[in-house]
Structure formats: C-alpha cells, structure tokens
Image (cartoon, rainbow, N blue to C red):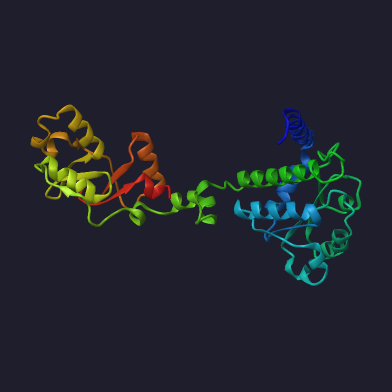
Length: 322
C-alpha cells in the first residue's frame, strides 16, 4: 500500500503535467491571429469536405478533429496518409480542403501526398509546431501549435503538443459553428440518437402515455383514488367531468391529506383536494418545450390536450430524460 509521501509525489507529477500543458495552451492562445482567421475562411469557402490527415499521435488527434467538425456542421472525414499514397487519394475531390497534422512538419507520409494536393487544386492547411518546416512552407495556411516542452517527464512523448493540436482543432470547429450560425437544432439533427437530439426533435406525442389513463370523476372517494393512483402507475390521477378536465390529484396530495385530515379522510372526494387548472401541453410540442415547462413550474408531469382542451395523454419528466 502506498505511503502518504508516495501519493503526494504522484499527485505532484500529475499537477506538473497539467500545468505544463496549461502554459502551452496559454502561449498558443496569444499566437492566434490572422492565420487562424484565414484557415476558418478557407474551410468556409470550401464547397466540398474538409479532409483531415496525420500520422501516429497526430493521426489520432486528426480523427478526433474530423469527427468534431463533421458533428458541428463542417462535412469532414479522416484520411490516413499511408493509405492515401496507396490509392485512397481518390477520396479527395477538387472541391475539398485538406487539413494536415504533423508536429515536426517533416512527416514523410504527409510530405509524399503534398504534390498531389497541389496538383489537384486543393487548398492545404497545415498544423505543425515548426513554422519553418517543409509542410508549413508548402501550405496555403499554417497554424502554429508549437510548445516549449512536452508534459512527459522525459520531454519526449507527445503530450503538450497533442493537447495543443486538439485545442486548435476545437477552436476551428467552434469558430466555424459561429460563422455558420450552427444552432442546437442543427446539432440535434446530426445527433438524433443523443439525449439532446431526442429532446429537440421528438414531440410530446411520440412519448406520452395515451392509454389506460387514470381518470376519475370529481366525486371519486378517497379509497378509489388510492386504487386508481396505484393502478395507473403515473403517481397521479386526472379528475374529469365528462370531457372537461377539472384538475389532478398526485400521490403527494393523498399522503398530505391523510396526515392533515386523518379523521375525515375517507369522506373526502377528488374535487376537494384536486389541483385546479393543471399545466397542459399540445402533443405536437417538442420534448424540450415540455422539459422547460416542467422546470419552470417545478413539476414532473404535464397533461396533453387537444385544441378543445380534451385529455389526450400524460407526459412525465422520466419520458423525456431516458
């Protein structure tokens, strides 16, 4: 088992690594300028895709950047430079822009495909730590991600440098989102399986409970109310006079009434304890609107009604936050 001193040394190494990477990002932040704006402009002007390429750790970062761009409104995919040199260059169309990552700027696999990129008429944006490298010199736009030192205790393994690359890629994606007026609804369309996509795209009618609803009459006695709430499984009952909604009674209402009016509890009717004018929503409203209404009113259920105020169903916060 580790001693306290051993644990302290581990934490100190971790803090030093985080601090080193933080300083690298601060220095890169100060260097951002016209070249970055030009890179964003170049990608915006592209009528094709943003092809990201890189080897080794830069390639892994490149995959992340391509995925982030694609999910935030900039069509993009990752192309392995080794595979590109052996036939996959056909994946690059004349309308595409290429973003090449190489910290040294001298990666052989990247430099081999540069002549094709130029001959094909593609704009080339490079991301290196060496502004005077071969890749930087042969690019239309160069993004400097140079760092003073790696966070690695040997100053060898890519650590600060890959963090800088990731941050630069994120900065590109965020800036492009802003320029494209990319909204949360756009994001949801590209992430239909995610929680946000579900709430923004699906409607109340898609998830509401619309069968076997626990509906009781205004004169329903306490014993029957308890049975209806238990059977309904929603933690509430809807009090209706014909087609007209009179109110709702929750299991909390029942418990509080039992505590406060114990002696007369079984003489109480639904109308006596119902919450009048309950919050309602239309079936065609988006789930995000239902969630906002519940949050604003500090409730967990909404009655779903048609244009004439007739009950169609019940939607609960648990239906939204699956």
